[in-house]
Image 1 (tube, rainbow, N blue to C red):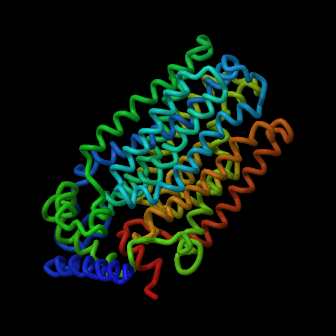
Image 2 (image 1 turned 30 degrees about the horizontal axis):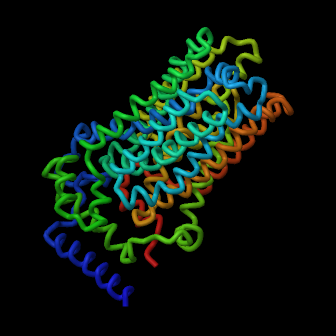
Image 3 (image 1 turned 120 degrees about the horizontal axis):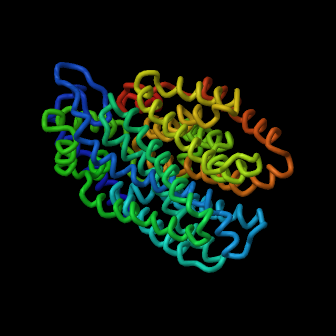
Length: 465
């Protein structure tokens, strides 16, 4: 009986949405992450920009917490009494990643259930709590608990940011705006490295480094209250009038009609109930796209890039290179490459950047960080938010990001031990092999999405049964 009532409600909900849209022409004149043609000009790129910048604060925090223990790990280990233990040092890094796995697992359900804005605010809360715990702890256990809390926020933020940016961006700049998350991650990483420099002379400076991270986290929670909600999320919940208001806020009144028409196309292809079963993501017509996304994130981490970010100070020190100079160089190169990727994303396309990036990483360690930032860094998150069908997008993104964090966890946990056992040459040869395999995988499986609307990509990639 209850199932019949639910079915009736869903039919009525879809019918009301479609009846409301009968007045809209199914034109395709520039709009919400959708393609453009006809005589109406593209929507302004300026309108969604402030909302996207607020969303990228979560990516800034992600980068900051990736790098915050780089320069400070030695002083943390001395003050908390685990100096010389590579296992304990690895746990300080990897416990954060374990928390990120937990956060990413629930990110799809949270962002679908509460909305993108509330998901951002929720990701800021454990980051504030965890950073405060780490800044005030006097034991390894307290540090690990704080890092775990921070990790849950790190796991929740990136997938929601990728969804949000793709859903509020016009198609013609979606690749450019999608690169903002990677640039923000680079800025966060560089900020952590720069703020951590005094830790060499001040053994307690690492506490300041953790306190600093609470400032952008608080800003994220506050500013999201004034940011727009994803029109796609509102539309899927039958909030038509709110959807129109947010579309006008993002793109201007002339583009509301065409944007609503595009949203209806996705809706017409999705007559199932809103609830997505986990099993749907693992087999059937959605398996291929989820597998591609998971594999891209796995290869991204198996390239060894985050081992460079986590332990660059340790590696530089063992090589006799001043860690301050080396870390700053890494940060500048990473940021520069991400800016170049932003410029090229909507010109060369996602697939070409991915191929060139993985091949460049495999060919030489000298431009490893640069070539990573040109494709393997910014593209997977953007590409996944584009190729995943709207009905499963949030939850499938959560599954793929979980794979990212599992691989990231083990790389962070085992890197120092493997470096001692195998030496840098053999270890980086292994990473280069994974990069080569990634390039082959991209060539055979990844489609180009440049300039296409989210609905066009969905209709092309997931054919009607």
